[in-house]
Length: 76
Image (cartoon, rainbow, N blue to C red):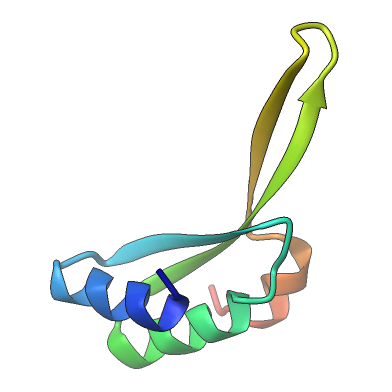
């Protein structure tokens, strides 16, 4: 789903908070935060990074909440 679909859906089902995470990108953070403020849903900015775990030879996904890029977009 796109951010402009996810945030209204979160509101419709009664969520107060939702984390929005792109894969290897932070491009949707500004829109998610803006829509969240408009609709009264706290959009938690996040990014998902792919990584390789050498020991187990496994592809892993690392989630980072509130990446530094997003700090100027949100108010605490």
